[in-house]
Amino acid sequence: MSERTSTESAFAPEPANEDERPRDTRARIQEIALRLFTEQGYEATSLREIAEALGVTKAALYYHFKTKEDIALSMVADRVAFMDDLIDWVRSQPPSQEVRREVVRRYADWLHNDRQHDVMRFMERNQTALKDHPQMGQMRTKMLTLVSFFTDPGDSLTVRLKRTMALFSLHAVWFMLPDDQVTEAERADVSLKVALELIDSSDS
Amino acid sequence: MSERTSTESAFAPEPANEDERPRDTRARIQEIALRLFTEQGYEATSLREIAEALGVTKAALYYHFKTKEDIALSMVADRVAFMDDLIDWVRSQPPSQEVRREVVRRYADWLHNDRQHDVMRFMERNQTALKDHPQMGQMRTKMLTLVSFFTDPGDSLTVRLKRTMALFSLHAVWFMLPDDQVTEAERADVSLKVALELIDSSDS
DNA sequence: GTCTATACGCAGATAGAC
DNA sequence: GTCTATCTGCGTATAGAC
Picture 1: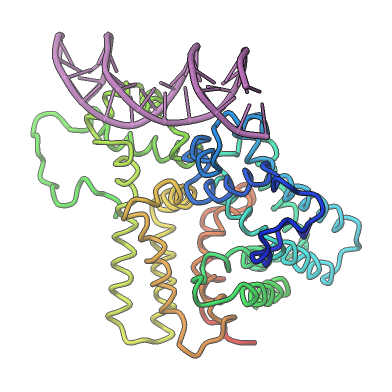
Picture 2: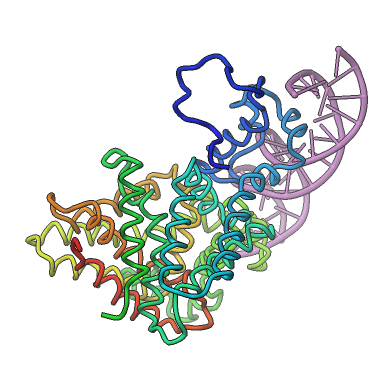
């Protein structure tokens, strides 16, 4: 699930790979749709635009996806599965501060992996548009469930907010630090550092 | 504060009957549109829906607003003006940590005031939909400008992220703490406390 | 200030040929 | 797997009566 599109394959015009010959149209649809949905919004992006950017007609899209919504949801699936797995893992562990730190690390690893932050941006920006669908609607709940493990019953509201912000800092780094001043590796680095500080924070 | 209609026209325009009979349809349109735009998204909300919720027809809306976009922008105006004012104020002050703290306080005050967080939610959720319009497009820039005052040239990336998160915590508190467990006053309180901690943070 | 009626276009989606 | 052609409906917006 990590190695999908190696970005450094820009030099190889030949498909030296094993299988993918037509470069999997389905994947290309997802790629283009993800970009357009994120840039313009889900509702504002028409199937015509996606088809034109891909160089095919609208009808062709319907061979690969049943509806427009399916295109969006196909990209959300991974994230839903990841959240469920992570929540299951936490539940299987004895509560401890180290488990919390490990949750932050796993969340950060997954987020920085591949291009998951692109999918995240898409989901953040289109939460209202897709909120009717069960898979999307439950994401907020899953997020709240996850952060609920970050605090103990007696913790103050201040601690709760700060520890909640731990996961948040992992997201914020992608749109609050200007793109041209910091590399992706630096983003991953600094956001994890701040997140771990926040998860370990207590009343001051 | 958010009283646009009464900028300085407090002189009774019509003596006999109070203008409050039709309850200012324009304001009611804004009120309903804000709710629907936030809940469903700007693109997903049609003028028909707004008109029906208001109990009038689509055509009636066009007497009060020239286009659908105008309805949205009419609600953004206040926030744009506030950000400009705040940036101007910072520029007029000699740089100091106390000025930074004051920025956080003013930002928080304004946000918790009235129903500005409703407008904020609307803007956050529809930034992509309205990003083409200059007023909306400049909001990200204004935000980055404001946080640029939070750090000194020599500050580490860690400090920059943490201080940036100060403003962020003021927003996050509204959707990351479940509604039924905390009052609005508590939200305002705790988020300001955390924000001030973050603005004062340094390398650890 | 609100209505009815209507123009006009583009949206999502399907059928069936190749 | 992709095409052309087409259906159906709803979107924004306008004209003009009351």
